[in-house]
Length: 205
Image (cartoon, rainbow, N blue to C red):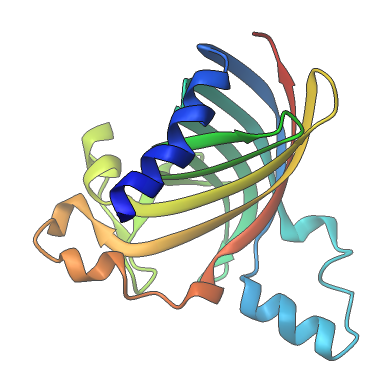
Protein backbone atom coordinates (compact mmCIF):
# COMPACT_ATOMS: atom_id res chain seq x y z
CA UNK A 1 0.00 0.00 0.00
CA UNK A 2 2.82 2.40 0.90
CA UNK A 3 4.69 1.48 -2.29
CA UNK A 4 1.57 2.12 -4.37
CA UNK A 5 1.14 5.54 -2.75
CA UNK A 6 4.74 6.43 -3.52
CA UNK A 7 4.28 5.40 -7.16
CA UNK A 8 1.09 7.45 -7.44
CA UNK A 9 2.93 10.54 -6.19
CA UNK A 10 6.19 10.05 -8.08
CA UNK A 11 4.85 8.95 -11.47
CA UNK A 12 2.89 12.12 -12.32
CA UNK A 13 5.84 14.20 -11.13
CA UNK A 14 8.26 12.33 -13.38
CA UNK A 15 5.96 12.45 -16.41
CA UNK A 16 5.28 16.18 -16.05
CA UNK A 17 8.91 17.13 -15.48
CA UNK A 18 11.25 18.26 -18.23
CA UNK A 19 13.51 15.46 -19.40
CA UNK A 20 16.66 17.51 -18.79
CA UNK A 21 17.02 20.70 -16.77
CA UNK A 22 20.28 22.62 -16.33
CA UNK A 23 20.47 25.43 -13.76
CA UNK A 24 23.44 27.59 -12.83
CA UNK A 25 23.69 30.43 -10.37
CA UNK A 26 25.19 31.91 -7.24
CA UNK A 27 24.84 30.90 -3.62
CA UNK A 28 25.55 32.36 -0.19
CA UNK A 29 25.64 30.30 2.99
CA UNK A 30 25.72 31.44 6.59
CA UNK A 31 28.66 29.69 8.24
CA UNK A 32 27.16 29.22 11.71
CA UNK A 33 24.74 26.36 12.24
CA UNK A 34 20.96 26.51 12.59
CA UNK A 35 21.14 26.03 16.36
CA UNK A 36 23.31 29.13 16.62
CA UNK A 37 20.89 31.10 14.44
CA UNK A 38 18.00 30.14 16.70
CA UNK A 39 19.93 31.35 19.75
CA UNK A 40 20.82 34.64 18.06
CA UNK A 41 17.21 35.28 17.06
CA UNK A 42 15.96 34.43 20.56
CA UNK A 43 18.44 36.98 21.95
CA UNK A 44 17.51 39.59 19.28
CA UNK A 45 21.16 39.50 18.23
CA UNK A 46 21.50 40.21 14.51
CA UNK A 47 25.18 41.20 14.47
CA UNK A 48 26.32 37.81 13.19
CA UNK A 49 23.68 37.61 10.47
CA UNK A 50 24.50 41.10 9.24
CA UNK A 51 28.26 40.47 9.14
CA UNK A 52 29.37 39.75 5.56
CA UNK A 53 32.41 37.82 6.84
CA UNK A 54 30.10 35.16 8.27
CA UNK A 55 29.00 34.01 4.82
CA UNK A 56 30.56 31.61 2.33
CA UNK A 57 30.00 32.62 -1.30
CA UNK A 58 30.13 30.54 -4.43
CA UNK A 59 28.42 28.92 -7.41
CA UNK A 60 25.57 26.40 -7.59
CA UNK A 61 25.19 24.02 -10.56
CA UNK A 62 22.29 21.56 -10.86
CA UNK A 63 21.59 18.99 -13.55
CA UNK A 64 18.18 17.33 -13.39
CA UNK A 65 17.07 14.27 -15.38
CA UNK A 66 13.38 13.62 -14.79
CA UNK A 67 13.35 13.31 -10.97
CA UNK A 68 17.06 12.51 -10.51
CA UNK A 69 19.39 15.42 -9.81
CA UNK A 70 23.13 16.00 -9.45
CA UNK A 71 24.25 19.15 -7.64
CA UNK A 72 27.70 20.70 -7.59
CA UNK A 73 28.30 23.59 -5.20
CA UNK A 74 31.61 25.43 -4.83
CA UNK A 75 32.14 27.91 -2.00
CA UNK A 76 34.90 30.15 -0.67
CA UNK A 77 35.17 31.66 2.82
CA UNK A 78 37.72 33.01 5.28
CA UNK A 79 38.45 31.45 8.64
CA UNK A 80 41.08 31.41 11.36
CA UNK A 81 42.42 28.18 12.85
CA UNK A 82 45.04 28.25 15.61
CA UNK A 83 45.72 31.95 14.87
CA UNK A 84 46.43 31.21 11.19
CA UNK A 85 44.19 32.74 8.51
CA UNK A 86 42.98 30.38 5.80
CA UNK A 87 40.84 30.51 2.69
CA UNK A 88 38.44 27.59 2.93
CA UNK A 89 37.55 26.00 -0.41
CA UNK A 90 34.60 23.61 -0.49
CA UNK A 91 33.13 21.55 -3.31
CA UNK A 92 29.95 19.72 -2.38
CA UNK A 93 28.72 17.16 -4.91
CA UNK A 94 25.42 15.41 -4.23
CA UNK A 95 23.18 12.91 -5.98
CA UNK A 96 19.51 12.73 -5.13
CA UNK A 97 15.91 13.39 -6.09
CA UNK A 98 14.20 16.59 -7.20
CA UNK A 99 10.50 17.15 -7.81
CA UNK A 100 8.54 20.02 -9.32
CA UNK A 101 5.36 21.07 -7.54
CA UNK A 102 2.67 22.49 -9.84
CA UNK A 103 5.28 24.36 -11.86
CA UNK A 104 6.00 27.05 -9.25
CA UNK A 105 8.25 25.24 -6.77
CA UNK A 106 10.88 22.53 -6.70
CA UNK A 107 12.07 20.46 -3.74
CA UNK A 108 15.17 18.33 -3.69
CA UNK A 109 17.27 16.14 -1.44
CA UNK A 110 20.73 14.73 -2.06
CA UNK A 111 23.76 13.15 -0.45
CA UNK A 112 27.45 13.32 -1.29
CA UNK A 113 31.00 14.25 -0.26
CA UNK A 114 31.97 17.79 0.68
CA UNK A 115 35.58 18.20 -0.52
CA UNK A 116 37.38 20.66 1.72
CA UNK A 117 40.87 22.10 1.46
CA UNK A 118 42.29 25.20 3.12
CA UNK A 119 44.91 27.56 1.76
CA UNK A 120 47.23 29.36 4.16
CA UNK A 121 46.78 33.04 3.26
CA UNK A 122 50.41 33.79 4.15
CA UNK A 123 52.25 30.91 2.49
CA UNK A 124 49.78 29.80 -0.18
CA UNK A 125 50.14 26.15 0.87
CA UNK A 126 47.14 23.84 0.89
CA UNK A 127 46.22 21.49 3.71
CA UNK A 128 43.39 19.47 5.24
CA UNK A 129 42.47 19.19 8.91
CA UNK A 130 41.22 16.37 11.11
CA UNK A 131 38.27 16.59 13.51
CA UNK A 132 40.50 18.29 16.13
CA UNK A 133 41.69 21.00 13.69
CA UNK A 134 45.13 19.45 13.41
CA UNK A 135 46.73 19.93 9.96
CA UNK A 136 47.31 16.77 7.93
CA UNK A 137 49.74 16.12 5.10
CA UNK A 138 48.18 16.58 1.67
CA UNK A 139 50.02 14.34 -0.80
CA UNK A 140 47.35 13.93 -3.50
CA UNK A 141 43.87 15.17 -4.36
CA UNK A 142 42.69 11.70 -3.39
CA UNK A 143 43.53 12.59 0.21
CA UNK A 144 40.92 15.33 0.15
CA UNK A 145 38.32 12.91 -1.16
CA UNK A 146 38.73 10.10 1.38
CA UNK A 147 38.92 12.63 4.24
CA UNK A 148 35.92 14.66 3.06
CA UNK A 149 32.78 14.47 5.19
CA UNK A 150 29.61 13.26 3.52
CA UNK A 151 26.79 15.79 3.69
CA UNK A 152 23.04 15.91 3.17
CA UNK A 153 21.56 18.82 1.21
CA UNK A 154 17.89 19.79 1.02
CA UNK A 155 16.62 22.49 -1.33
CA UNK A 156 13.39 24.42 -1.82
CA UNK A 157 13.25 26.69 -4.86
CA UNK A 158 10.57 28.92 -6.33
CA UNK A 159 10.22 29.32 -10.09
CA UNK A 160 10.12 32.97 -11.12
CA UNK A 161 9.99 32.39 -14.87
CA UNK A 162 13.41 31.17 -15.97
CA UNK A 163 14.92 32.17 -12.62
CA UNK A 164 14.74 30.18 -9.40
CA UNK A 165 15.17 31.67 -5.95
CA UNK A 166 15.46 29.26 -3.08
CA UNK A 167 16.71 28.12 0.29
CA UNK A 168 19.05 25.24 0.97
CA UNK A 169 20.08 23.40 4.10
CA UNK A 170 23.34 21.44 4.32
CA UNK A 171 24.06 19.01 7.15
CA UNK A 172 27.65 17.82 7.21
CA UNK A 173 28.02 14.41 8.89
CA UNK A 174 31.00 12.80 10.63
CA UNK A 175 31.13 10.06 7.98
CA UNK A 176 34.12 9.93 5.62
CA UNK A 177 35.22 7.38 3.03
CA UNK A 178 38.44 6.94 5.00
CA UNK A 179 36.37 5.26 7.74
CA UNK A 180 33.73 3.76 5.47
CA UNK A 181 32.80 1.10 7.99
CA UNK A 182 31.43 3.67 10.46
CA UNK A 183 28.03 3.95 8.77
CA UNK A 184 26.43 5.11 12.03
CA UNK A 185 28.28 8.42 11.63
CA UNK A 186 25.91 9.28 8.78
CA UNK A 187 23.21 9.82 11.41
CA UNK A 188 25.11 11.06 14.46
CA UNK A 189 24.83 14.83 13.93
CA UNK A 190 21.87 16.78 15.41
CA UNK A 191 19.49 18.09 12.76
CA UNK A 192 20.10 21.70 13.79
CA UNK A 193 23.86 21.37 13.25
CA UNK A 194 23.52 22.21 9.54
CA UNK A 195 23.91 25.52 7.74
CA UNK A 196 21.36 27.60 5.83
CA UNK A 197 21.96 29.18 2.45
CA UNK A 198 20.20 30.93 -0.41
CA UNK A 199 20.64 30.39 -4.14
CA UNK A 200 19.69 32.37 -7.25
CA UNK A 201 19.64 30.14 -10.32
CA UNK A 202 19.11 30.62 -14.03
CA UNK A 203 17.55 27.69 -15.93
CA UNK A 204 18.88 27.00 -19.42
CA UNK A 205 16.65 24.06 -20.41
